[in-house]
Length: 172
Ligand code: FES
Image (cartoon, rainbow, N blue to C red; front, side):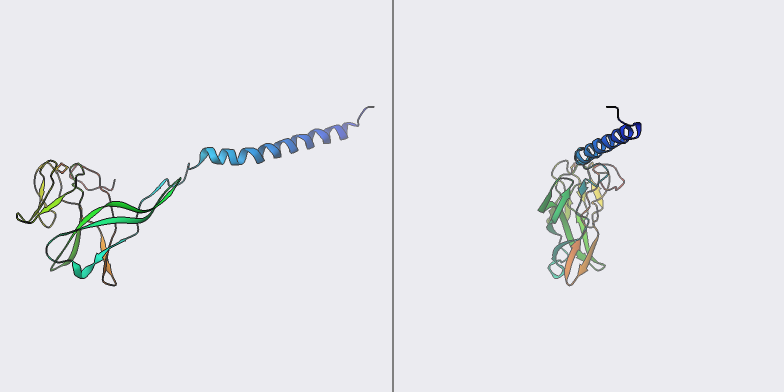
């Protein structure tokens, strides 16, 4: 028995539509999975200020304070209480100052030499004044300052990792 042309056309269109719908339903999650995390921010650095220490604990002599992020996220995971680095804090007549403890030369941890009254890097012997200014050694710039605020008697520091090397200061 011969089918009417209209009925044949309808069945053809309905079959294509049904097949396309099923294909799209299966393909959408697969494509989304394969493209994840294209177009998303893959690493969320700790841009929120970190509660570092009580402001009245800081005097004229630099104090090293470790900085930890409460939460770090990337495209696949979230990790809590992540060590980021450290800051050297000190107070002078203008207020409290924070310097990154990361050497601007190649990234070693800078220590404070109390006898010499200056910061020193053990890796290649760069030296920095207590203000962070470069004194000697291969580092081309002084220690990197970190933004801070004081809220309810607590020092809140925003951690920034700067690029190693060079005389200009750029976030990494
Ligand atoms: S890493 Fe500090 S002087 Fe080289």
